[in-house]
Image (cartoon, rainbow, N blue to C red; front, side, top):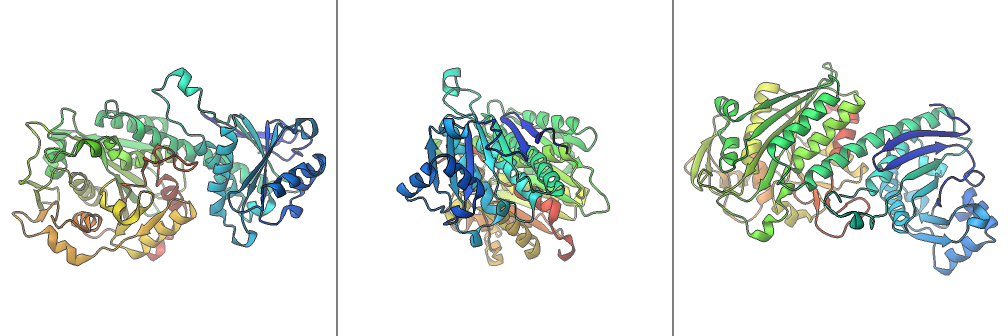
Length: 528
């Protein structure tokens, strides 16, 4: 990266551009708002804060004192009408909390919150003065988080709104990041590389959110297949794709998956992606639940519970977002496979009936007692296919599988299940560092007996009314013989029905893309 007169544009996406500068932000402003960070009770050690305050005749410190601003975490103070003195329309100060408790992972939600606040004030551009302590010793990660904060906090899904309604959404168009002139060239380059990668990650999350938010009228299995093909084409050879139709799946013995698709007029699409990473490294298969609409089948959902069931392909959307980033960045990972068993669960004269018995690819028979427990049926054949034909070193499925996980963990937290404790710990720790909440759940084997004892090898529900997230995970484990495997239940975390936040917009959230990409880049494969 080279600077021209102290400026360099390093990222540009559909929602704006990021520019890095080593110039003095007070001497060469190019934005409407100046954003400063401050640790709690530490304003005297922020050189830019001190300079701005002096230029403003102590107005900034006086307003902070008047409103009790101390620099506590996510605390803000805004000072307007300062342009005659510092050439900005406003100055915003964001509190980072106590310095000794500040973590790199705090940076993403705090910056996202500040940028959302500035956007809500109808400003279009912001200059960010980055404290050296925020950069810590990982300037690449700080750059990545800066880009992710900027782009993801600006996400909106207003495709179907009128022009007048769209204008109500104020979105930032430019972020200028000011690095200290003393920042080494090595750190400048690392920060810029981080911004470039973070922008690409954000684009993958945008894609995932858009796919989930798209009405099921338009987001069919065929449309998911089209999106997957587009990703493969744009990768220019890094990603290959194979799609199995109904007859090919039937020939392979995927009766479990096809039982879900029987009631719909739309054709199932069993999508297989392959990122041709380093074959010398261990391979991973990501399986994303891809039910483009879930009516419950003949076990029909109540209408209220059906309103948001376009979200039931969020696992597949997560996998597509990850492959979008892999194809654009050519990350140095092992081979990565992606399976999306896409179909629609609808009631009709052809639909599966409660009491039907089907055979999965691994030859196990399943008694379908509830057609609304369909996700596990589709995933069963996807997991069996991966283990039999792809033979990955690890498998991770991402699925909006059970409402029970929301009863256990609430709407924001993903449940982690699996057959390998070390792998579960790695994903958990990565999710915490990325600010994507998750929790490791028990695989309580005694409950497995509740899935047996019917007319077939397995029942698809227990009927006991409790521990539904656990029994669903146990059911899936019957289709994984020996591969280290995790099941991520994202029924709550993938979709936000409550008030939007800077990191969790209304609708699709894109949960898991940032965590899984970071894990692919850094996880310790030796101990698993």
